[in-house]
Length: 337
Ligand SMILES: [Zn+2]
Image (tube, rainbow, N blue to C red):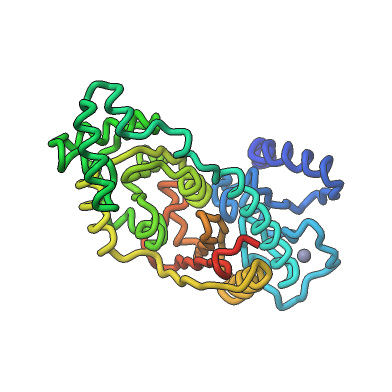
């Protein structure tokens, strides 16, 4: 009976392992399970218990690993980077390199200039018949004269439009829902992203629904790169939407007063220096799970130092700031290479 149960649990993994064998010619040893990003979440904790046991004897996550043996003093369960264990510092570096290369490529695909193709908010509202031509002229003139402020703000102050109308216009402009701050818990949401992202980019994690969806609110424009990075890190489906200005600002200030995950922001000279740095951190901290994602020019490494720190209820969101650490890197002069 135990044999049957084990077999059922392993079926999905077997399919993937066979797939791996075909694509990269790696031999599959009967009693060793090579964790795959496809099947394992961080540290494979998303796997059924039967698989987790099989997984305890790990093989190196570096695809080009040539080590026939592992140094006897090396921990065989840590460090884990993106669900893979590295048998040596050199192999961890190779894994980090692959991740950095991937993040560079992803970012390129996701950073077109989406706003260029959007109908300007003022014109959209004019076309909807929500404002008149003279009203739009007046707001535009005021914006031009002051040299600051968004057109929505000027339409409110100069033409008496309501905040609800502006946010409705933004939602049409971006083809996204209007989100509210109802059910927003600043303490919980402060753990989702490093605060530097909340400060720099007009975004705000709002709430998690059904342990599966994370609602991400934006002040005036959606940010596909930020949404994608958040999705990769949290393993939750991210639903983006616009939030009415005043409630967005109120919620954001509340979040910024809460404790977040301990974060270190660091500028490094270039890609090579960053890869070496990340490897050194992983080797030193020996995380049970870690991951790298890029959000615009920020490279964000999150590490879970103890398995208790991995939130099970909702994706990979930390439950407390304990035993989770963030390192955020920027490359010299925002350079990408
Ligand atoms: Zn190795």
